Every structure is written in C-alpha cells, then in structure tokens.
Length: 219
Image (tube, rainbow, N blue to C red):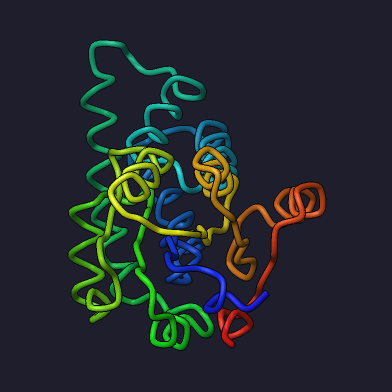
C-alpha cells in the first residue's frame, strides 16, 4: 500500500518509530531502578513490564511498577516515584539527543503533503523540545505527548480536523489500540519494536500492514 496516495493525515508514534530509542530507554530505566536501590527481582519484573507496554505514558508506567512489583513504604511511595520519574526523564533527554532517525523517515516526512502529527507516551514538553532541537518540528502540524493518553490524543486530532482518511504508525500494541479506538488505520513499524513476536501475531490476525523502512510507503 502506497501511503501518500491514500491518506491526508499521518499520526506518528515517537520512540521506535521516528527515533531508534527503545532499547536505550529500556537500558536507562534499568539503570535508574538499580541506582534507586531496588532488588534485582523488582528491577527484572519492572523491565519486563516496561518492554511489553511501550507507548503508555511514562507516569502510568512508573505507577504500575509500584502497584505491581515494588513493595515500598506507603508514606515514601510518592517521593520514590518522583525520584524514578525525574532520573529517567533526565536520561531520556540525552537519549533523544543522540538517537538515530529511523530508516526512510525523512523521505516520508518530506514526500507526504498531508498533515503530520506526533502522538507519544513521552512527556509532551520534553518531546516538543527534542523535536525542535533535532530540527524536525517544521514537518509536524502538532506534537503531543503524555500525560494525555494516546487514544485521547488521536481523538482530539481527528475531532478538530476534516480529514477524509487517517493512519497511525506505531510499534506497540498501545499504538494499535489508539488507532482502533478511533477507527483509523494502523501500520506497524517493526525494526525497533520491543514486542515483535506479539505484534506480528496481531498483524496476521488483524491484517494491518507491516514495514521495515518508511520508503516502502512512498509512491
């Protein structure tokens, strides 16, 4: 399917889609949790959950860590959550500054004449800063991130604009669910996904397109 001929709006996830940043982010989260003194069992459980739930807002991920895997003193929980959040956010800024762009992304951003958006689980203020610093902001009509959930972001984009046909390009189940919740198409960008096996099974079941290079979508 040639994307530029079929859609007037593309919504991009960020991590693992615009940037090759998933694996560095996993490594950063592991380092932060270890630095904060959590046990190897707690760290391993958190990281397994983290890898399988990319695309979820950062604060939600950390809340889930504490709810599911970390047995902390209740009176210190908010402070400990804030510590993990701040350390991880600092690490993410450095990762975004150095991350490679995905294969063919600039070709697609340049060729596609319709509106383009970013809808990410990364913190919105941080994300906008990085997109601007990497000289990518002129490609996108808007850049959105957490704390707003991705499905809500997509809904707000579609609600405010008269698009005939839109597509979300992502690398995780959260992206697919945000697309289906808003009855738009979904394309799976595979190379840097942390959940390739489950997403390929889902692609076979739901019949959405899978790509390894954005140039595959050009006319």
